[in-house]
Structure formats: C-alpha cells, structure tokens
Length: 426
Image (cartoon, rainbow, N blue to C red; front, side):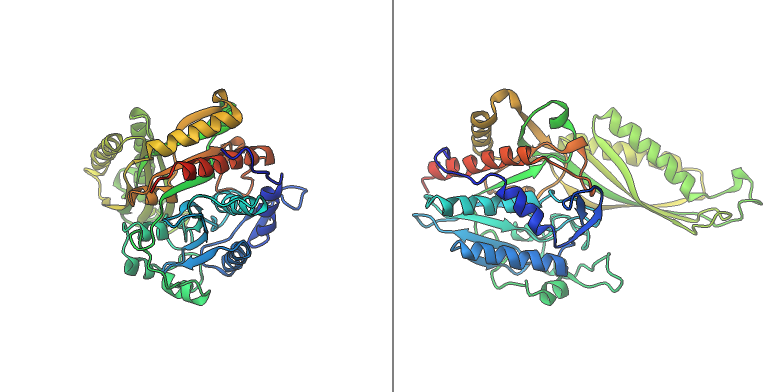
C-alpha cells in the first residue's frame, strides 16, 4: 500500500543517533555512535528529548496533547475525523541501556509522519505518534507505568505517589512530572482520549530472529509473567564459631531456592530468574541474617505460569521447613498473557511478506512486556513488529540492530499503518 511513498534512506537511524546525545553513556567502540544510554524517565535528559519530539512533530503540523501522566500524543490530521491510528513506544531507557529499545518505536513513528509530509500524503484518518512515560520502570519501579494508567489498569494517584529508586534524594512521579513541565491537562484515559489501533516497532531483545536468519518477527502476543519478592530472615552469627548444622543462613537458603526456580521453570518450559539480591550484613565473617531477592517467572500461557508459581511455593516451603529461617513470599507484579488483535497481526504478516518475503518472517510471542500490553488491555486493536537484536542482547550498552534491519522494520511498519488506515470504515 505504501509503495508510492518515497522514503529517505538512513534518516531514521540518523535521528536515533542524533537524539541519543541526550543520555549517551558507556562508550564501547571507536565510533561516536558506539555508546549505550542512561536516559531515565522524567529526568532532565528525557525532558530534552521530549521537548525535541514535541517541536519536531509540531513542525509537521501535528496537534500535540500531553496527558496527566506525561504521555505525549502527536496527532497528524487525516482527511476524516476519528480516533488516531497510533504508533507508540517509549523514550526512557534502563540505567545501563542501549540506543534502540523503545526509542526505535517512537522515532519510527516520527519518521512515518515525516514521510507523509515529504510526499504530500494525507491519510484517511489521523495518525499519532505516542511516547508512553516510564515503560522501563527503572527510575520509578513500575514498568509499563503510564500506559497502564491510560488503559485504566493502574490508578493515577497510586502512580503519582511512587518514589524514585535511582536518585540520592527520592522524588515522586508527580514531583518529577511537575519539575520538567510534563504533567499535562489531557485526562489519562483511553475512553476520553481514544486510539483506533496501536502498532509498535521494537527490537526483539532476544536471539531467535538472528539465529533463524529472519528479518521480521510478526508478534502475536506477550507471555504471562510475575515478579515475586522473597524476604528471608535468619541469624547473624560468627562464621568461625557456628557449626554448619546450627546455622540460620539466609543466603544458603536463597541459593537453594534459585536452583529450585531454575529446575521448575525448565520442567514447565517457562523462564525463571533470581535478581535484585540484597544480603545483610554483607561481611565476610558473619552469616547473613537477611537475604532479599525477586523472582521473575514467565510462561507463554496463564495456566503454565500458574503451574510454575504453585510448584515454586510448594518446593520453597519444603526448603524452609525444619530450619530457623523465616520467609515472606510477596507477589509484586503480575501480567496475564497478552493476545494481539488478529486483524492487525494479519496486516503485519501481509506487509512483511510483501517487503522481505514469507521465508524471512516469523510469527512469535514476545518474551518481554511492552506498552502494547496496555493498549490491548484497553481493547485497542494492537500488534507489534520485531527486528533482530545482535547476539540477542538488550538492556545493555552494546544493544545493536543494523541500519539495514532498522530500515526493513520501518518499511513494514509504514506499510502496516497505511494499509490499516486504508481499511478503516469507522
């Protein structure tokens, strides 16, 4: 559908590198572009790239709306009125992140609007670029934060009260929004600020496409996942004077739990990790009396995740039984498996096949959560497009997708948006 639209080669990758000056860090190679990113949500660096995005979209004639939780909606007019077809992702990064995660999705949306303008093309209905606030959950510990408020999944006042965990002096989400001028007037609600559809171009963040030599991942949904906090309390005692069978060693208990998690998730063909480990006192000759950590468990189905969680609870109880270690098991976050819209998936598949060939595409489930989960929760027709990640590496300064891979993904996204718009009857 978009074959008649002339695109400017490399402008998208140049834009990615240009905007990476706000937050560039962790140089890993000889080129100026060989850096990672530290652009935390609602920081001054993120304010700079937000300001730039607003200015660039306004130059194209977009109407820009900013909602109460800082989401940016830059709307390019169509021939008819209606809820916009959206292209969304995020501009915030992990503290030790790369240049492509989320950033590709927002800037590819901008590039589509630039392409429309270059070609004097007006879509049938409005098309919007959306920057969702704090998808990463790095500075403020709530991933997919603002899109979940817009979708009605999270309460805005609860989110406003979340405090940062990366600042020496913690600051709330509300304080951060106000300090950078991005607490907007538009209500953060999918009912009063609706979208017709949501498309997201993203790096895979895993090794599958590269390993199977595929150019495009046609994403059908996102696997279910849960984060579970485990706090262990024991006794701090001298390591040289306390017999092995008389210890309440919380770190030893944590190690046993980590092995159990690994074995159970393998058995159920799921995924499981132990992270965010805090041991106290962290002293060489004192047995740890406190160990806290988080389990991250995932499965492609809700039932599979439930089975993993049930087995972990059962096996962990056996580990604790008969010891002097006390355990607190706390569910921190849960997301059901997400199933994207079949019509949107079919359009992505058709467009990807036209551009790279059917043998270079792969239908797949995303292992990571994305803002597209929130739009699906709001019953907005949604799908995603993946491009390969070198070495399957992401959330890492060396995260990389080639200019050629990025251009193929952009072409599929452009064709998808134009095709969806042409099929709208509203």
